[in-house]
Image (tube, rainbow, N blue to C red; front, side, top):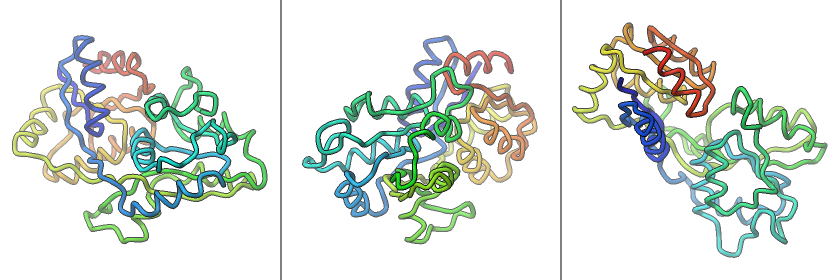
Length: 272
């Protein structure tokens, strides 16, 4: 059975290897490209003010990797003197691994329990809500799309502010805290080759299982293959919002799964 892994290239490689080790015929088709930040100066400015925040919330592993890639050598370490009170908030294991690569002290990291049903903003808020009091200052590090849903170039303001769900920021503000945003990387649509498109056509109808961990990946796929029918296609997705996007795109079979490899493997087998 073939599994199409659609995550950005670095994360896709990890999942492909894990699935291949388990006996699945996994192949990578990254549907989100990752680029450096649109305005590196804003990332540097965020690092210059890092000690003024009580917590930094990272929306993804890519947000972590690119933010710390811009870290000045003189910037204080999370969990070390000079930044002792800064917490690092992440929604799941992938971002946690990125923080570990960045040598962030585990004692200052907050994330949902590994047994949580979902790794998302809601699950993270249930863990950190007690910390957020009036005056609590949170920096949210996220990405921006280099193009909007219609394929048009993003404005400079939107590129710098970033895009994505603002639910977590709304909860912080409702609790009396303040929120700032910084964009540490850009996302872009895929550049599919002729062989990629041939694989897409085949995988849409041959019983392959599409693995999605992002609604944006589905949107990029549909936009890149506008005449493709998904009426025979199967998808395993890691969140209810992604399931909605897959059904809207026309996928015939959509199975929701917890975003752990063990759960994903069981879900893949269930739709085979």
